[in-house]
Amino acid sequence: MILFKNVKLFDGHSLIGERDVLIKNNKIQLIQNDIDEQSIPMDILHELKIINGNGKLLAPGFIDVHVHLREPGFEYKETIETGSLAAAKGGFTTICCMPNTNPVIDSIETVQSIKAKAAINNGVSVNCIAAITVSERGEDLTDFVALREAGIIALSDDGRGVQDAKVMQDAFMQAAELKIPVIIHAEDEPLAKGGHMHAGEKAEELGIKGIPSTSESVMVARDILLAEAANAHVHFAHLSAKESVRWIEHAKKMGINVTCEVTPQHLVMNDQDILEDHGNFKVNPPIRAREDQNQLISAFQSGIIDIIATDHAPHSEEEKSRGIKGSPFGMVGLETAFAVLYSKLVLQHKVSLERLLQAMTSRPAEIFGFKNGIIEPNGEANLVLVDLDKRKLVDANNFASKGKNSPFIGWELQGWPIMTIVSGEIIHEDKEV
Ligand SMILES: NC(=O)N[C@@H](CC(=O)O)C(=O)O
Ligand SMILES: [Zn+2]
Image 1 (cartoon, helix red, strand yellow):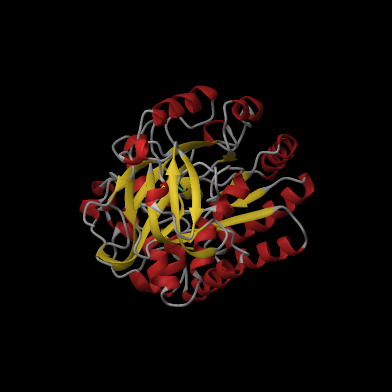
Image 2 (image 1 turned 90 degrees about the vertical axis):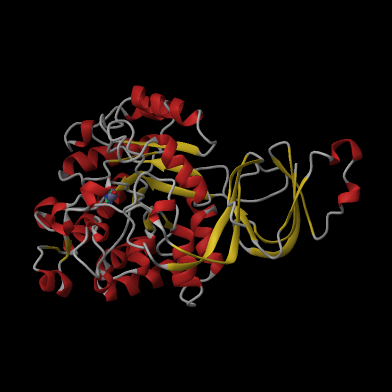
């Protein structure tokens, strides 16, 4: 039993002011202006843990629909266990793992084995996203019916784009019938081929081959049209280019069933922030130009971009030490997501705190059909407590993740998750407070 006193409460939709919140038997029991400890029956009072909020923020546990847990196959980069620890540290209580593992998550056996492993960890809910095509080869569709039975929440060939429009059309048609969202990693391979960073001034300066924005935007346009024709729900992963945003805005106005996500790194950086030729700055899609960044921020604030997803993509230090040309694409993000966005967007008055929190809680829940993402009486107690005043330098040595490949190392950030609760149990607590 936990009693939060005087927390600034965000209920999933809005900031509703200072409240007391009582957690009992996995559930949110009471939300009131003032809950008197004296009102709690004597026989259970000894089990009560009182947490003085002191104006700290209490929100629904964050939800991340784009996480690379690397298991099975790449356990040297991350495991389900270390990824779940990193999630809890970042305030996430629900995560979804991408299928670009080895073997690829394209069978019910792999889904079941991931779920079984996740169940013995810290309590963070791990959901599977299964591949659209067998082994993510872009050719034959996986067994959507069986995978849905096994409990997947979406389909995606993330890590690669599905190149063949006919394959994509067939996938949208089946997914629409089964009501499974399809997450698109929008990348035209011939257009992106051989590139390592955004095709712009910075790439020229460093003498590195660029990846043009069209490699993303043409696939966004194609898949809007294919999803419209099939009446499917298409969700675009990690948007990076201003042109993609324009097409999504248009599609939404037309009433097409489109949603999308953006990562912290694409919102707070542009290619001028790539300070050195280091693998930690390499990600796919790449960090683009300042105009792209500005467009992503305004589309995020207005809701054209629906949600935040971290695209947590751990790699080993050895792999990332080979410079921008020689390293694999990907950045870690679970442990820094909130602090990065709060410091660089909310405190700089570019995005409201409410909008940021909605995009990490109720909105992803709505889009992917999770029951959580809100705080309400009798609801499951999946929560995060955030200290909005806490300042800390990002130090990868302190990450729970095996991946230390963060572009934010050394940044001084404000607003850190300090306690994460799943079903009424504290699964992470910042001992420094
Ligand atoms: N984003 C990345 O740069 N890398 C991801 C793949 C992906 O999300 O597309 C990875 O698996 O490493
Ligand atoms: Zn991707």
